[in-house]
Amino acid sequence: MTRTPLTRDDVLDAAAALVKRHGPAALTMRKLAAELGTAVTSIYWHVGNRESLLDALVERTVTDMGAIRPAGRTPADRIVSVARALRRELRERPHLIAMVHERGLTERMFLPAQQALVHEVHAAGLRGARAADVVRAVQFQVVGHVLVERNRERAPAQSPAEGELWNPPRGPAAARTPGTSPDDAALARALARPAEPERIFLLSVRALVESLLSPGTGARDRSKPGTPTPGTPSPGH
Amino acid sequence: MTRTPLTRDDVLDAAAALVKRHGPAALTMRKLAAELGTAVTSIYWHVGNRESLLDALVERTVTDMGAIRPAGRTPADRIVSVARALRRELRERPHLIAMVHERGLTERMFLPAQQALVHEVHAAGLRGARAADVVRAVQFQVVGHVLVERNRERAPAQSPAEGELWNPPRGPAAARTPGTSPDDAALARALARPAEPERIFLLSVRALVESLLSPGTGARDRSKPGTPTPGTPSPGH
DNA sequence: ACCTGAACACCGTTCAAGT
DNA sequence: ACCTGAACACCGTTCAAGT
Image 1 (cartoon, rainbow over the protein chains, first blue to last red):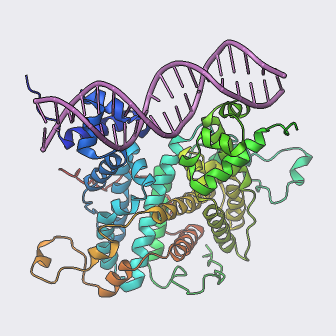
Image 2 (cartoon, rainbow over the protein chains, first blue to last red):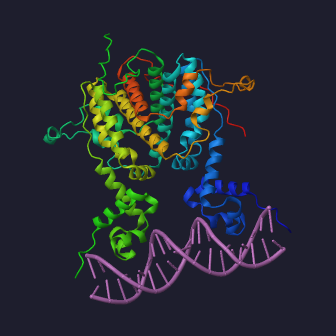
Image 3 (spheres, rainbow over the protein chains, first blue to last red):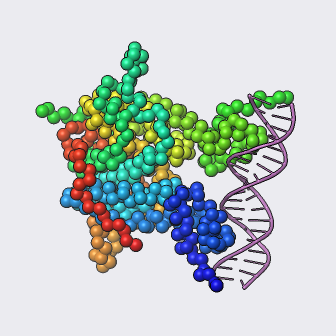
């Protein structure tokens, strides 16, 4: 009874399954060998060593991420749709995404999405360096938000909890702390509630896209980073 | 010649130094013991085990981060100044920040900054849940940007490089690829150049703040996050 | 209260040897 | 071309024993 020979893909599959179930720390060469029913050293013949095994896993995740198809009527809408699609894809592969991040490959994983963004920003009428800036700003924001969000989910019990800071002490001690939070009960309550990442995500992406796609606003390049922002006009009503 | 007894702080100091120089992976109990000139097992008496040693290190970093003082004339300026200060602080402690991130404590580290943001958003005239949303949006963006930026710095040689995608093939093959990048040489060149994170950072923060602080724009809550964006078909493979 | 060495279970990796 | 067991150097951790 000759066994069908072990292939490199067999190794990668088993490794990916282990990581998906128990995280990267659970992926040891010995456990992997046991899973595959081979000697530990066989694995080395197929994948070199643990480091390049993880590299291959990450590589797979990056290419698996695939192309993103924008949806929506306006360029702004389509950019937002790309952002949401990226967010969803990432949230389905938490462990592998963490590995991609640890290896500094997050940006490369986002190249297909970048291509879509370029198309939409161009459609919105932006050109040249300005368009490139907008593409990168959106990309940074989406990737960053996803990283933050994942970080929050893995956070242990927060102490002090976010909300606790915004219930100002009622006693005379309140006056002592300089720069303390203003008295806004609704705000305090809102911050005491857990964040709703998807809502914040949409809110932010829309705000950023709206601001960057409309020319002539203060968000243009000013070439002098230190210049003060003129007060935002408050439309009387 | 009785040696002055080892303290918990001695252990933490040596550990922090090791991490700062060579990263967390270089922090082994045996190396640490050698550094301190004690037996490996002494360390266990002071800090329990490696895991809680790292916890203590992270805890220290979080509290060391300290208070942030806003600067600038308008609330928008001061928010931007907080964002820049945070960015600078983080970039000075790359390894430790990575550890904070791995432990899911990034958000907690940002609580002091959150307090400052609340103050400024309130000064800008926002109240209640809307103000909380803006605080969180800015916070997510700043933290996210810093994480992305750090990720980029650690990235190995990118292949394909960002720019390569935006030099459309000159031959007849150009017409075949659907949704390809538009013909914008300046854009292609701009994306081929390395990103300037600080500029992108300022650009984005300003755009977001400007958009969120001005009421009545489309960036308001639309209360239906789940609407028409149809899910992009999963990348068949 | 603090420190020690010995021992254990577990790693990743190399290598000569098998088929 | 593929697989094997033995061996090496290195981990984190426990524990009984010292002072």
